[in-house]
Image (tube, rainbow, N blue to C red):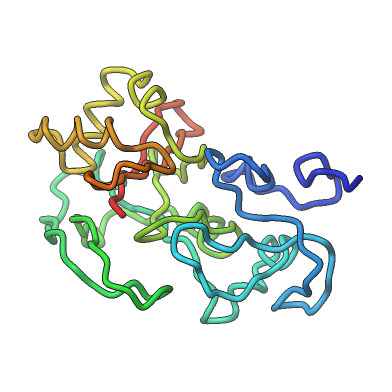
Length: 237
């Protein structure tokens, strides 16, 4: 019997994606799975490749963890990469530039070619007096596998550092957050003043819903390596 990927000691590890090899656990949303195919980057068949995206049938080139870890996989422009969310850079910044708020909109998913609803977001302009956390950005955007998602590849940050990806949340996990974490989560996901939306997210955030009369939500959780706070993103299918 083949050794589970999570028990192999020859695979490169990713500090911000500790469950990257947890095959068979949908809540962990693993980045890799066993495969006999050759890596699209190095051409070697070493028994493990990036997963086939269960959310959108991601057609991106499948690559091995070694090519992800050394950054060579991302030299290919067709390879999706994470984007470190710089929102929290401004939490401790005096007089930051005014953010630009973009409403939710319908667009075309670049992976599937199908119409999808993209969540509202806030764009924070670069601040001339604050150097972006380049080391974290380099690690997340060039040496960390993507997590499978419906809408985007934003990577949550806190305390000016990249968060550690924990996987997909259930209702119980969200309700277990501290009061402060819930307040911050609701604010970041534009439901701080919308109790109905928050309750909808709670009611329908399981990874696989079968009630088609409701929108299905997926919540990606992260933990700050500095202070331990948990946060993340809610996205609608």
